[in-house]
Every structure is written in C-alpha cells, then in structure tokens.
Amino acid sequence: MKVKVKLYGDFLRQGPEESIVELQDGSTVEELLKHFEISERNYIIILVNLKRSWFEGALKDGDTVSIFSPVGGG
Amino acid sequence: MFDFTDFTEDQIKRYSRHIILPEVGGKGQKKLNNAKILVIGAGGLGCPAIIYLAAAGIGKIGVVDMDVVDLSNLQRQILHTTNDINKLKTLSVKEKVTALNQDVEIIQHNKKITSENALEIIKDYDVIIDGSDNFPTRYLVNDACVFENKPLIYGAIFRFEGQVTTIIPNDGPCYRCLFPEPPPPGMIPSCQEAGVLGVLPGIIGVIQATEAMKYILNIGNLLKGRMLLYDALRMEFQEVNVPKDTNCPVCGKNPTITKLIDYEEFCGLKKENESKH
Image: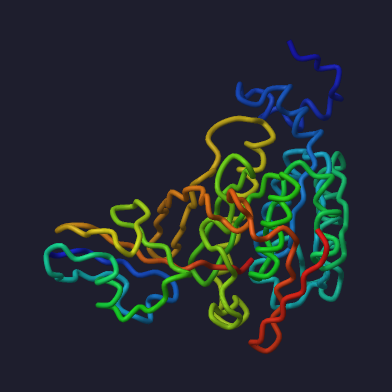
C-alpha cells in the first residue's frame, strides 16, 4: 500500500516535505515512523487523514499522514 | 433592549461596527468594555493580540513581560518602534494602546511569571492569553489556569509554523493532555536559535485575540478540544482533535501535579523548583 506523508517542523530533518511511501499492507503508524527513522515518541502529533492517530494506528492505502512537533516560541 | 445611555456618543461611533453586528450588539460591546484579559508576553504574539483587543475596547488588559525592547524584536513585535529600544515592553505597549483607545486600561506586570506569583497575577482576569516564548512558562501558565479555573488561549510559533488552541479547564483538555511534560531543554530550538517569519506571530496572535473575544461574548465555537496548526510555507491550516486525557497529570482524575513547577533551563540542564500552590 502507498501512503502520502507530510513532515513539519523539526521532522523535516528526517525526510522531504511531502512523499509517497510504500509499506506492507496492515502497517501501522509505528512502522511508518521507523521508515523515517523518527525515534521521538513523546513530542509528536500524528494526523491520519486530518484525524489524530497513535503509534498503533493501522494505515491503509491512500492515507495521508501529517507529522508535527510542539512549538513554543512567541 | 440594550440601554445605549451606557455609552458616550464617541463610544457609539468608535464601536459602531461591532454594535451593528447582531452577535455583538450594544450588550456584547459592553461585555468587551468590562472584560479583563491578561496577555503573557508583549512580543510577537502579544503585540498583535493586544492591539486588536485594545481597538475592541477591552476594559482592562494586563501585560506580563520583564524585558526591554531590543532591535532584533522589531521584525515582528509590531507595537514597538525603533524609538522604543531599551524601553520596558509593557511601557511601550501602554503608550501605543493609550494613543489608540483611552477606554482601555493597561496593567503593567513588569516581572517574570513564576510559581510564586502566577496565581496572584492571573486571578483577577477573565481570560488569559499565552504569548510567551518558552516551554517552562507555557507549562506554568497552563497549570496555573487549571488550578484557578481560568480560560487560556494558547498560541505558539516557530520558524514558519504556528499552533493555537483554547483551554477551558474542567470543560476540555489542557496543554498537558496533549504533551504531559515539557520537552527536555535544548531538544526544541527557540525562535532565537532557529528564526521565525515576522508575519507568523501576527496570524497566530490575532487568532488568539479572536478566541478571547468570542469567549467574552459567548459566541461561536471555540478551539476547545481542537488545536489549529498553521504552516505559512504550505499556506495550510490543519486541525487536530485533542481529547481530554483522564490520566492527565494536572487535570485528570488523579492528578500528580498539585503545585506549580518552575522548569528552568540553564545551558541545557533542567532544574525543577517546586513551590507551594
């Protein structure tokens, strides 16, 4: 299956702004994070099709995944 | 029917574009005139928020900031001018607001907000706007607002990204429901280290002012339980639903944080001081 992945903020260090990633059917968000070598698990917000998702969340073909970190500036 | 004798002729003219809005009206304008809003930080987020709140006639605006204006602030902190360099930010704000609208009283809190004074500072205000520039203050303000049951309009910026949400204690999630603990010092670079697009805090600060006014007016849908994520480069707004976490360390069923905490950052080392709540 293929999912579209959009990286934001500091996670842009881990890959391009937007990419299509091919994963095995039944893969989870956790596997996608491993694909990008993202080890952060606390300060991270993941949206799948604009809805908040968690690491064990199952992905399906055609999903769009957005990955953010908290920001603190003012 | 609202009694317009509460307003002067000038006030009716000044606020006429509000008064003709059915959602605001004379009654709503009076609520704005009687409102007390605290803005933490007179910087990138605070400046645009404050000036729109002042234009709207918010009766009392408290401003917490201990800094003086620096040349490097002027690229985004739009209330301060070149002539204000080395002036207290709260004084600079007061001068601009007074020139705009004398209906507004500016309360200068020229101090750092800490676990010792946070509850005292926020207690007299109806709504708190967080425009601070660091995580230790953000967690302190979140916890203080939960303890004092004060609505908190959270906004934060970094490089080209902004995040904003409205926290209504006991009626929705708080910031710790999303991120229970502050990031370790040094993990997330500051705007000073990584830069920020000058116009970005304008967009986020004005959204914060909008939320504060909606709360005072009791109109529309607040960003309660939702965080708005803005990306200026992509020119995209996205929204994250933030559920209340029953295990939240500060607003959950069995809170483990019952006192305010000063998270300090010294050269990448974290020092935690607890003080009495």
